[in-house]
View 1 (cartoon, rainbow, N blue to C red):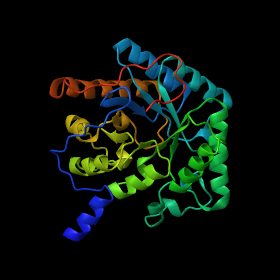
View 2: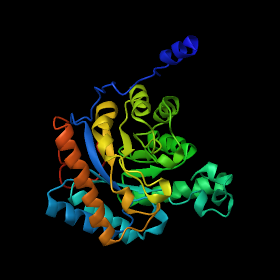
View 3: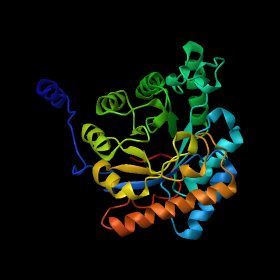
View 4: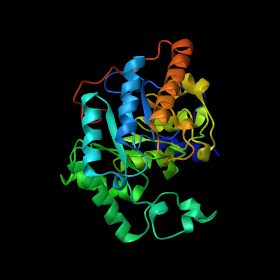
Amino acid sequence: MDDTKNFLKGLGIEEQDSNYVSSKRFNDKGQYRLEIPGIQSVNALETVLKTCKQKDIFIHRITQTKGIMFLTDDEISRMVDLAGSNGVELFLAVGPRATYDTSASVHTKEGIRIGYRLRGYDNLVYAIEDVKRAVSLGVRGILLYDEGLLYVLSKMRNEGQLPKTLHFKLSAHAGCSNPASAKLFESIGLNSLNPVRDLQIPMLASIRSAINIPMDVHTENPKSSGGFIRHYEVPSMIKVAAPIYLKTGGSVAKTHSWDTTSQDAVKRVKQVELVKRIIDKYCPDAVISPQASKDLAVPEI
């Protein structure tokens, strides 16, 4: 296997183990940031921000996962304003994807393998329109599920049809789970990578050594994704995968697109508290990115 490994090394892809230490950082020198996913509504976002203030916790990023098309213009504008006035990055998910399409195949044991990707030409167009609508209302962070859509949106951004400040984040549901795939996504314009949720620490290390963009790693998961909680692995995640967004609070939900209530939102913030305790106790020297400036409308990497 040495010839294969040497060839991969020439591509910048190397085997790593849990002793790997990432020297890569965010531009602000931070090793990690905190993210709460699954905040689907204005009310849930308001509750998260209010609860964080009460508990003196700063969240760097909020992600909506259900889809832009489920939000009204007013709701999107209010979420943009709330995030911006609190210095929080806001990412909204593309709405059209296989689960919302006319095909039922994605709900079968075989069809589920296509994940949330887009089927056909029309759905690609619909997804681009979904993104353009969000961008026109001030959104500068988009959660994607399809590599083809990423390819097109990146081309549009390069050609000035979308803002240069627009950032693309790939969902774990796209199935990226090895360093070669990660390099491919980075090469076609990805700004932030969610690998699949159950990768072991050496697997995360091998991906990190191959790419420079931030990794967004789930510290816990909805029941539909296994429900496993990885809080005690967080220090190792920071060590091998920095710069990293620690995606926390997912275990509160039953599914990926769970409609988070205000009560659920409070529970998600509690999970962040628990992760922060682990960091402070077991890796107190880990550097968190500083709180962003107010009126931040654009994700900063």
